[in-house]
Length: 179
Image (cartoon, rainbow, N blue to C red; front, side, top):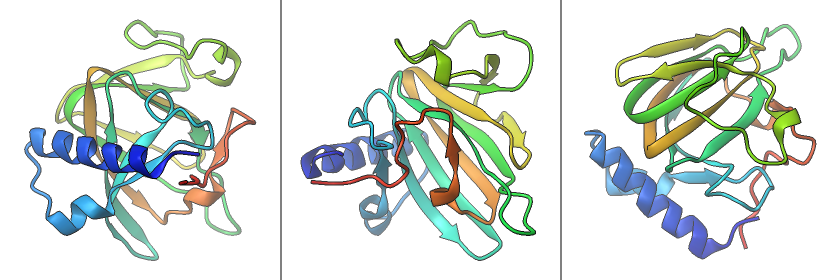
């Protein structure tokens, strides 16, 4: 749960980072920015800010924002019926962005959330600089984190079913409650 005042602050700060990254967004788009705290009530530590540019039945484009040292929890996009699950391309635009995916433990720059080492199991670090891209096949377990400046990235994907995402942390609730 996050407070409405916290959401308002997050929207303003996310819009500022998007603009700092050199991306023009309209006032209407600034209002459309959402924040997800995953039911953990600690948005600035584990959460993400999202501006959906468009979403059709087949494709979607979003701008994702992480505040300094903010972490998007470990998750994956499962198959649904005959669909293998969401395939996602992340393109770093600005800031310090560390992605964690399957592979050998190469984590150097990012950190594990204290007390949650068992729910951040992917330790292969991809340090994405502006212009770098990462393709995440359907079902790929991943998490990501910003460094000291925060991070702005594009997410291009196939069909979005965010409410069906699976998380390693059993305490996560996908829908953010705003009070």
